[in-house]
Length: 146
Image (cartoon, rainbow, N blue to C red):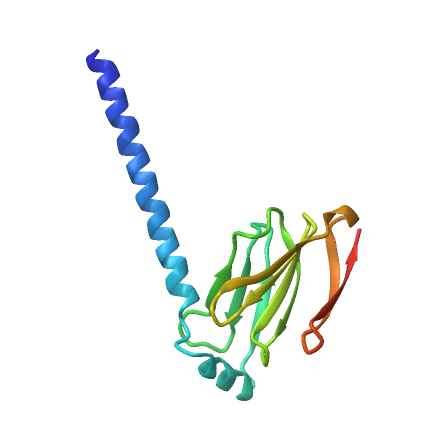
Protein backbone atom coordinates (compact mmCIF):
# COMPACT_ATOMS: atom_id res chain seq x y z
CA UNK A 1 0.00 0.00 0.00
CA UNK A 2 2.88 2.37 0.79
CA UNK A 3 4.38 1.80 -2.66
CA UNK A 4 1.02 2.52 -4.32
CA UNK A 5 0.55 5.71 -2.31
CA UNK A 6 4.10 6.82 -3.13
CA UNK A 7 3.60 6.13 -6.86
CA UNK A 8 0.35 8.13 -6.81
CA UNK A 9 2.09 11.03 -5.05
CA UNK A 10 4.88 10.99 -7.64
CA UNK A 11 2.34 10.97 -10.48
CA UNK A 12 0.55 13.98 -8.96
CA UNK A 13 3.88 15.81 -8.55
CA UNK A 14 4.78 15.14 -12.20
CA UNK A 15 1.35 16.33 -13.37
CA UNK A 16 1.66 19.49 -11.27
CA UNK A 17 5.15 20.21 -12.64
CA UNK A 18 3.96 19.67 -16.22
CA UNK A 19 1.02 22.03 -15.69
CA UNK A 20 3.32 24.70 -14.24
CA UNK A 21 5.66 24.36 -17.23
CA UNK A 22 2.76 24.69 -19.68
CA UNK A 23 1.48 27.79 -17.85
CA UNK A 24 4.97 29.34 -17.89
CA UNK A 25 5.29 28.62 -21.62
CA UNK A 26 1.88 30.20 -22.34
CA UNK A 27 2.78 33.23 -20.23
CA UNK A 28 6.03 33.66 -22.18
CA UNK A 29 4.18 33.37 -25.52
CA UNK A 30 1.64 35.96 -24.36
CA UNK A 31 4.48 38.27 -23.32
CA UNK A 32 6.14 37.91 -26.71
CA UNK A 33 2.84 38.49 -28.51
CA UNK A 34 2.27 41.77 -26.70
CA UNK A 35 5.83 43.04 -27.22
CA UNK A 36 4.77 46.07 -29.24
CA UNK A 37 2.83 48.49 -27.09
CA UNK A 38 0.80 49.81 -30.00
CA UNK A 39 0.34 49.25 -33.69
CA UNK A 40 1.72 52.75 -34.33
CA UNK A 41 5.18 51.59 -33.26
CA UNK A 42 5.00 48.77 -35.82
CA UNK A 43 3.88 51.14 -38.57
CA UNK A 44 6.74 53.52 -37.75
CA UNK A 45 9.17 50.62 -38.12
CA UNK A 46 7.79 49.90 -41.60
CA UNK A 47 7.89 53.57 -42.62
CA UNK A 48 11.55 53.69 -41.62
CA UNK A 49 12.27 50.77 -43.94
CA UNK A 50 12.64 48.15 -41.22
CA UNK A 51 12.69 44.49 -42.21
CA UNK A 52 9.48 42.83 -40.96
CA UNK A 53 8.48 39.37 -42.09
CA UNK A 54 6.49 36.25 -41.30
CA UNK A 55 8.17 32.86 -41.23
CA UNK A 56 6.30 29.58 -41.57
CA UNK A 57 7.35 26.44 -39.77
CA UNK A 58 7.15 22.69 -39.60
CA UNK A 59 6.03 22.99 -35.96
CA UNK A 60 2.61 24.29 -37.15
CA UNK A 61 3.34 27.90 -36.16
CA UNK A 62 4.12 31.26 -37.76
CA UNK A 63 6.47 33.86 -36.33
CA UNK A 64 6.63 37.63 -36.85
CA UNK A 65 10.21 38.95 -37.04
CA UNK A 66 11.83 42.38 -36.92
CA UNK A 67 15.29 41.87 -38.42
CA UNK A 68 16.43 45.41 -37.63
CA UNK A 69 15.78 45.09 -33.89
CA UNK A 70 18.85 45.40 -31.70
CA UNK A 71 17.45 43.16 -28.99
CA UNK A 72 15.04 40.28 -29.53
CA UNK A 73 14.19 39.87 -33.21
CA UNK A 74 11.16 37.58 -32.84
CA UNK A 75 8.11 39.68 -31.98
CA UNK A 76 5.20 37.20 -31.92
CA UNK A 77 4.30 33.56 -32.40
CA UNK A 78 0.98 32.57 -33.96
CA UNK A 79 0.08 28.97 -33.14
CA UNK A 80 -2.75 26.63 -32.25
CA UNK A 81 -4.85 26.70 -35.41
CA UNK A 82 -2.91 24.58 -37.89
CA UNK A 83 -2.59 20.85 -37.32
CA UNK A 84 0.25 20.36 -39.81
CA UNK A 85 3.29 22.32 -41.04
CA UNK A 86 2.53 25.85 -42.24
CA UNK A 87 3.87 26.47 -45.74
CA UNK A 88 2.45 29.79 -46.95
CA UNK A 89 1.87 33.24 -45.48
CA UNK A 90 0.88 36.71 -46.62
CA UNK A 91 0.90 39.88 -44.54
CA UNK A 92 -0.79 43.26 -45.03
CA UNK A 93 0.48 45.93 -42.65
CA UNK A 94 -2.13 48.63 -43.43
CA UNK A 95 -4.98 46.26 -42.49
CA UNK A 96 -2.95 44.60 -39.70
CA UNK A 97 -3.81 41.10 -40.92
CA UNK A 98 -1.98 38.03 -42.11
CA UNK A 99 -3.20 34.84 -43.78
CA UNK A 100 -1.42 31.54 -43.33
CA UNK A 101 -1.94 28.18 -45.05
CA UNK A 102 -0.99 24.71 -43.96
CA UNK A 103 -0.39 21.24 -45.33
CA UNK A 104 -3.60 20.17 -43.53
CA UNK A 105 -5.60 22.38 -45.93
CA UNK A 106 -6.46 25.14 -43.46
CA UNK A 107 -6.26 28.88 -44.08
CA UNK A 108 -6.21 31.19 -41.06
CA UNK A 109 -6.64 34.97 -41.00
CA UNK A 110 -4.72 36.48 -38.06
CA UNK A 111 -5.06 39.87 -36.41
CA UNK A 112 -1.41 40.96 -36.11
CA UNK A 113 -2.16 43.63 -33.54
CA UNK A 114 -4.02 41.38 -31.10
CA UNK A 115 -2.20 38.14 -32.03
CA UNK A 116 -5.46 36.28 -32.41
CA UNK A 117 -7.49 34.46 -35.05
CA UNK A 118 -10.05 36.42 -37.05
CA UNK A 119 -11.28 33.60 -39.30
CA UNK A 120 -10.35 30.04 -40.13
CA UNK A 121 -11.20 28.05 -43.25
CA UNK A 122 -10.78 24.36 -44.02
CA UNK A 123 -10.36 23.54 -47.68
CA UNK A 124 -8.47 20.28 -47.18
CA UNK A 125 -10.54 18.42 -49.73
CA UNK A 126 -8.31 20.00 -52.36
CA UNK A 127 -5.03 19.02 -50.64
CA UNK A 128 -2.27 20.92 -48.88
CA UNK A 129 -1.82 24.66 -49.35
CA UNK A 130 1.19 25.26 -51.62
CA UNK A 131 0.84 28.86 -52.82
CA UNK A 132 -1.30 31.92 -52.22
CA UNK A 133 -1.97 35.40 -53.50
CA UNK A 134 -4.01 37.65 -51.21
CA UNK A 135 -5.81 40.92 -51.88
CA UNK A 136 -6.51 42.23 -48.40
CA UNK A 137 -8.33 45.34 -49.68
CA UNK A 138 -10.94 43.14 -51.39
CA UNK A 139 -10.85 40.49 -48.64
CA UNK A 140 -9.92 37.74 -51.11
CA UNK A 141 -7.24 35.10 -51.39
CA UNK A 142 -6.46 32.59 -54.11
CA UNK A 143 -4.61 29.42 -53.17
CA UNK A 144 -2.81 26.69 -55.04
CA UNK A 145 -3.20 23.20 -53.63
CA UNK A 146 -1.60 19.90 -54.44
